[in-house]
Length: 318
Image 1 (cartoon, rainbow, N blue to C red):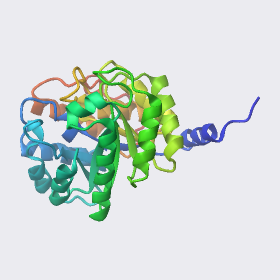
Image 2 (image 1 turned 90 degrees about the vertical axis):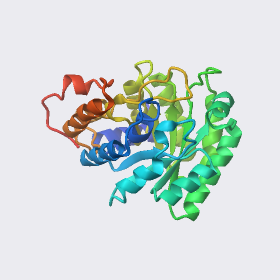
Image 3 (image 1 turned 135 degrees about the horizontal axis):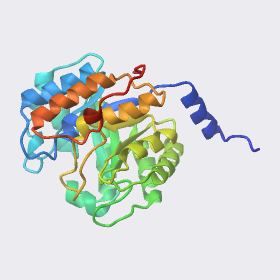
Image 4 (image 1 turned 90 degrees about the horizontal axis):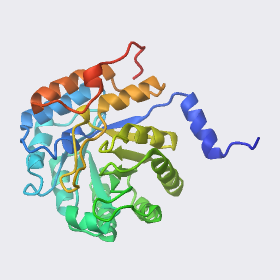
């Protein structure tokens, strides 16, 4: 029987040691951005505080984008100001260009989240940049954060498929991450923005990206549009992704991607990870309670399965 490859050995040791998967709570930004009914600053801040209460330590608190295109994020500065600094918590502000980065830095967020796009068609519609331009802009945003003594990370949108042109060439994504890594972000994320990926595809791309940029960490951002989100998260973790984006209640979607509904619910992902013996530092039962509260704020049932079914009798792993 052939010896295990070093990568396989490392993954096996990782699972055997029950190390921690880092969670990024994106509900206050990606969860809310596609909602037509404007959520008040008070409720947005309360959502963030409840996320902190259930253990989230990296949170997308807002996006600093054109308020005419994303009205839900028009009060980004007010949210950051009302929340204030929170010791031990990284407040992430998503930005698409230098103007947004300047706004976010002036607001006092702890980390910038830049976005590069793997599809020219989607990039032009979403942020007025083709794929190559979006990489250049993301690199400049990372430099702006570093000059301001802040950190930055980069997400590659539509890394697995574009709603306008179909499949995305993995080699193009690999070339993008190579260029982005040189700018010095704290991590690079792969986003299944429209929820078309399947686990084998996710595992292959995460593995390739991980090898291309190590020791820089890989983050995964999955949408559950076609009911593959939770499986894709697991495939990504098995392939070496160490950070996972989730949204309380499964709320979310992209305003510029037709049919791109639904992030993976925070509580659903926690249940899978904790039952599998992986720690996250988050409390599942507290997340379920927060999800029930969020349903009341939104005035509708959210996609979360755990909010309906509840937890299962087990020793909680956080």
